Image (cartoon, rainbow, N blue to C red; front, side, top):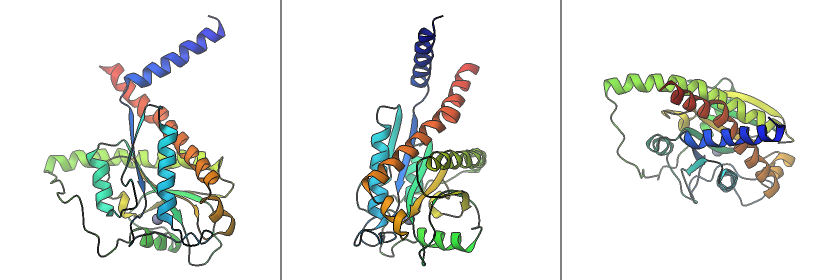
Length: 262
Ligand SMILES: [Zn+2]
């Protein structure tokens, strides 16, 4: 076979393979929102806050993934506050394959820089992570839940859920590693690695779920980069490519494997 025919055949096979498999559904969760929960202040852009850039990043990722056989859902599509449990419920109810919570980091004392991706653990590994989790887990006191009926898990449901969550936890680590790998080649700031922490927004998700902290708002250079149009576009591209990588490496290969066994 001539090489170009082989390439056409290969790309056609991959396209058809993806088209026949269930599309990947991603729930993006822009952190914070509303007047009471603005997130960390963007010190390099006075008067603006984390909530704005997290939402802009979600929109940019959604644009990147348009026409890529990936369905993108958002927990919030505007400047509104949502409870942590509600974000989890939204992901579970829509049967999303992935849940990615988007945040911009900050510290009491400026200095730290770089990007990190977290998956769930019972406890924070160090004091800096504990402080970060405490900040990210805050909800405003006036917040009223929009989704009120929490599903009742039955005994069998619990067991199935545990098994699902066990696999989801392993896949969460892989998703975090894939995101960091793409961020490493994109962001000019350090790779702080894959970490684990007890983020409220990761508790109870039935799919692979991570929190992305894309950089530090209170670092002079990084704070400008992660709030600039170009910086956010770069990061959106990196996270989108990571989502596509995850689809190719895990989601589609697993679905196609199932098809083959039928
Ligand atoms: Zn945050």
